[in-house]
Image (tube, rainbow, N blue to C red; front, side, top):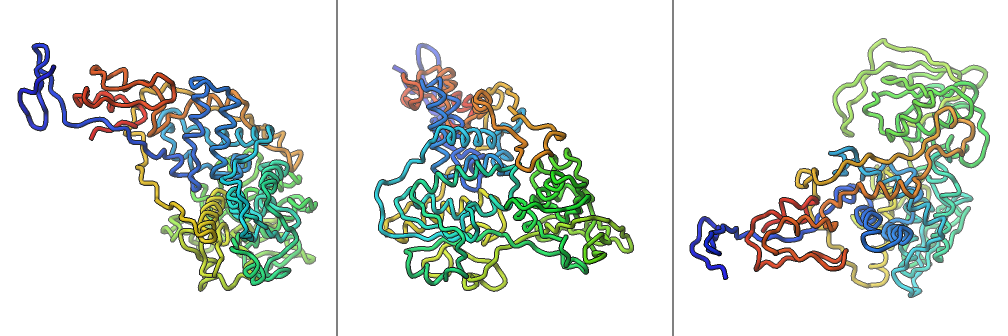
Length: 558
């Protein structure tokens, strides 16, 4: 048996078999970290868990069908829209993926889309939190992503929910603000129907604030969640813009997505640099027109999704940077062109982007047959003015409770954001509504785990694996139909291969490195794959080899 012979600067020296071994007082601990992908996702979807469920399927004795179903259920705990988000989300999760320090981030968005489509094809049904049917009825105003997310999570918790929608179909800006070539209507319909199948009642053509007073909802329901879409486009506020062939971006997209044939002529000019501007310009190309975007800053400042900008350029959409409209010319009651002011970039403004400054005396004229102003948008707050504070939009606390009694709110009526932002608002509000209505205590403790970054991992452990890419229609084949989807979903083998690129940042993935490097038998390797590893600390001499060789950063010395 080893015998301690002396202490030395926090180290202990043992005599064992005629030789001495120095040991540190530090001992290894398994400490799970937050993966940066889930941390960056506004809804904190369990991305790592989803990917690793697929990656380890064969190792843990599961078929891939079992793994896909399990992975989809993991996502459905936080979002009802994986097929939708897999198509329209700008995937901020991927911007933080530690794999980007090797050959590129994991294609999380495409894998999510694959799982969403897999679930629709298989008819998978979300798991309810309880089979109890609660007595308290909840009203949701607006059937966009925020409202439907709230309804979904409340329905999972047993609440009867009624969703009131002003238009003839559900979906909000998902339906009326995103072109079919990015989000096919049948995909949106299918994921909405799955929510309705959970017992959610939908009442369309019901404009709360006009057809139905907000006070009536307040009196008849235990709680109300307000999720108005930002469907009111801003005008340019320049001389001459009142004309039948001048649209706001939201108006133009609404008409097209409603099935209306909009005559745009031979040349469409779109003013703006966001997703709505890009979508409008690309639709114009599909309607047979030449398409030009006028943007007052440079490409670097454009807020639109980069992939959408690239897609527009591939489809021969022209972009004129550093220019803004000054005056619109009319002839015979229609707008026919405009004078444009050349701009240059000055100091950063409140958004962090450099402010565009007019170049004195530098102008040019631009002719068009249709003009679309896609500079920004806002909700129509008619009937909800009482929830607005000062000059701001609706304000809430961190759990999306408004100043109104029994009223919560989320989505674009708080501020313009991503689809996944609205989904997150709805999920958190549903949790808060449940707590307030039921009186049951809800755990709100924040995630205290630190976020793991690549510089605390052993990236050399992971073999290089090229990122999988979905099949994309060639630019020349895209323009024939408005509803012709550009990108295809992953094939099954692509989804599996992409899952194998996940490095399981901050969580054990059964690589066995700690067990292999430990010379003192201080690591207990489980007999059954997937069970947790353990330490026999009495055997450990603190050599740190397990921590130094743990590729995912799960082991720390303390």
